[in-house]
Structures are given as C-alpha cells and as structure tokens.
Length: 186
Image (cartoon, rainbow, N blue to C red):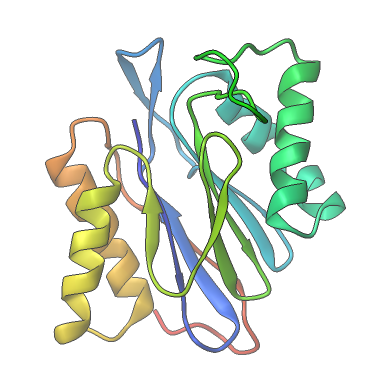
C-alpha cells in the first residue's frame, strides 16, 4: 500500500521518492513525516508494502546499506534482520526466499535495482517504481519527458499521480537526491 520510486539523472545521482502513507494491519492508514527510504552516502533502500518489515528497513537501513554493497547482499541482510526479529512470511516459502509481502528498490553509485518480494533483482535503466501505486507512477513518469526534462519534477509528479489515483497511497510526496557529482537541479 504505497509507492516508492527512483530515477537516475545521468550524472551519477538518483532521485528517490515515495508517498508518506503507511497502512497498518491492512486497513488503517497513517501519514508519516518521512518517506519510505533509508539513505547512506550514495546508497538508498526503499520499501513498499505494509507490516513490520518496513520498520526493519527504516530503522536499520543505514546499517544495512553501510555493510552491503550489492542488491543481493542488501536483500539477504534485510531477510536476516527480519528472521532475527521473528517476522514470519506472509505466504509459504518459495524455493529460495520467504515472501514478507514487501518489495525493495536499491540505489548505489547512480544505478537502480528493483528487488521483488522473493529476492529476484533487476537493474533498471530509467524511472522505476514499486508498490500498489507503481503503475500510476510509471505511466506518469514515462509520459512526462515529452514536455518536462527536470528529474525532480518528474519524480514529484509521478508520486502525485500515484497518490491521486491509488487509494493505498497518500500524504505529500517525499523526495531526496542520492549521490551524484554535482548539485541537483530542482
């Protein structure tokens, strides 16, 4: 019940963002002052979905990012913390990884990886989103470059589209610039 997204800017940086609405127990929305991303240096980790796994990422994500440099290692670290806290998968285990009902986006060195709920990772070259509002955000982000080239504006409007059209998303957009060699254009 969320939207998280990332857009590389072509200069080694990535704009990351999310809505601010969290859903507890499947149906009780609450607005958070912060986004759904942990940031450490030029790395960032966003989490979509509901439940206790989000607190693992947001409350310990900087350590996970500091200690792990690849998407596979980040996913394994998140799963280790989840198991250590006694969190249970929302569905039965797959061949390799349990499903905790959340997906991740990992950013490092200006690159973006989509990590699904079972640990499969896919590098994304352009705008990417996860969560229940992802389709709205992706559609908006891919339509915007026809008349808008500012990556901050594209991310902001993509999140706004998800908030407007998906009832699982809410609050104001949260956006941050990660990495890059020069000051971002806002």
